[in-house]
Length: 564
Image 1 (cartoon, rainbow, N blue to C red):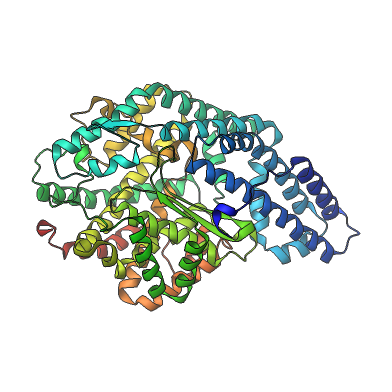
Image 2: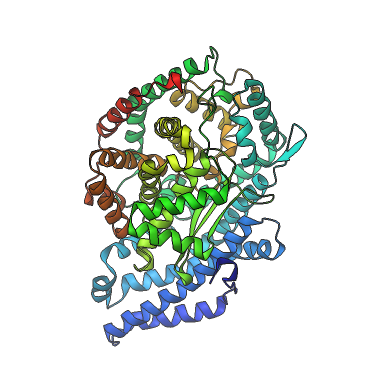
């Protein structure tokens, strides 16, 4: 069955509630046979999979076409009703925690599930359902606003993603004009972005207070399933980035300015890497998918089987289209045991990055698809290890996509990944400040962004753009709106992925087998336990960053970027 044939049918909430109540009653009955209780739980999890599959189909199809009336209405329905499902889930979790059969249940499903239940218990009560509904509604508003962008440039109309090639043009005037055209969309909608975010911050703060938290920060961490680190660990990790990575990135930016022969680099120069042009894939979507198939067949038996499955099921939606929401993601449709990859190709190297990145997510869940549904995905920071590491494991085949631009790509990919770390912690520190100070004005938020941005990215100059100088760049970072505190996960995972890059250069077979083992573990361990179980260094441990960036700098130093 192809993706287009996957049938959507809205689950009946009353029936789901009835099944939930019956299962809870069974779990709580001390006279029931524990083996029968375990069977009942498995049956309930199968129904959860079906329900989640329907919600995934709505979300995917709505993101492919945000003005499809049917899925727009279904998305609105689920924005209102996923909090109801969360209430049912919370009741089920509580029954599992207090069941007289807990010992047998824990033996069957693992202690980590019960730790998750304890954490989730703190993050929900029926009193916050209206807040969750509003949060969903506002997040959808942001996505629709971004998808609505119609940018006039040189006589044509483009969406935000389609503007990227112009932003990377070797002609500085084109870059500047393209950036201004793109920025006009954000300027024209400044009040709307401010309103949506202001309402999101306030509703999340109210939610946290209602649940007994001091503010949204701890609630946000608990909602992300962080069991073995807290905001203090993250703060110390950001300090490592500031001390060990920011100076290295500043040097990389100086190298770039020299090779671009620009004495006063501006923000619109940052995405251009070479005067000869940035590396670009040498074909269209179909061409790239053909080469991805060759790459994955040669990489391993497991990846070969995986890419055949993805192509056969037609679960790769990669072209940028009108009314398609921005960005890229990987989803999973449990009913069909099928990952789904969503992207917006635009003819830049990002197309290959997003293809290999999302394929890493999809490959991981494909490897752990037979695990208990709680364990199929790891927590978000661990999940990003698989995607970012897959980008690096693609290096031996990267010439298939970039041909004469291969060295350029390897330089920009590695340097760009290193340069990303200061930006990632900028987003994180900004969010900590915002949720510590939920009552501040929109203008104070913008000022805070610009101050934090200067701290971690002193090379980012907006001399020619007063709108960005006042601190509005973050409007385009969707995670800030829809997934608070998630963004730091990318940086933590990047530090782990760098370790796979190092291991791969030392012993490819050993590195790949280690990575494959990590994929098969899914989310059966918490973040720190997961990485230490496969021998990766903990990013929170002081000295980890300094140790890891040294071989990266050494490699970049072997490339004469002035000749590229």
